[in-house]
Image (cartoon, rainbow, N blue to C red; front, side, top):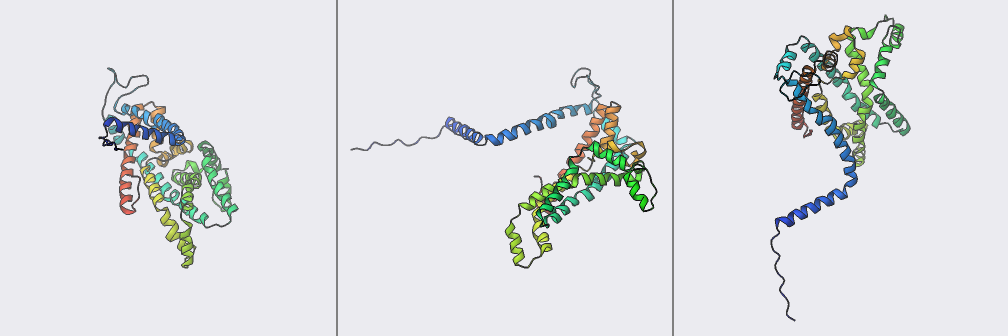
Length: 323
């Protein structure tokens, strides 16, 4: 029999390419449908509560009052007036300085404590005790700021628990939350106590992902626990430490305003008033919506700049960063 010639395959048309790409994308979506079901609600919440409100930033460049339109014939545009007013305000130095001071204190004590806590707890071999300590350290994080503030106010009163303990050592009872010089210390202690246990979760999970064979090799070579911690555990945490430090430095102006508003008072404004509490008083109490929006935008711009610089430095020094 005479064989029939098979026609040569012609060039693939653009229509067939589009069909193949579409079918491949459809297959990928179907195969990862469960993952998409988790991602889509989270993405929707982020868009709704984080990106959609950014439209309101434009009132920082207007004289806005409630009920007025963002774009209308009656809209009064003032440019950078509110930013200049904040920079010239008598409160500018105080609120910016207090924000940086309180954030640096929290960074100094609150950033390293979760790392040290995770390293120490990792060396404990009693699993029951280890789980108990982990659980106990997480609990303060889930206590509401309102409850924590109530506890702090109660403890620091002249008849509170702190003064009862200090009187044993001969220290006179005082209302500690009314003393400006003591506020940074009290705020730092409360903030670190509340968050260090939960912040250590990330380091625990990273340590658990380190290859156990590395520790076995170190033991065979005669390395003790200190050597294993210094040469294996800490290098394994280097990337996550760098990322956390970048985020912490970027939020240097974002002190825990919710907690501060609950425990400060006019007597401690000198050392306790931060950008967040200042915008709360001026915006909510005095109704200066455009002015406080400008202050918040200024704070966000500084935070983004610091994050960008810290990321560049981290990539240069450690090779790790957010991007």
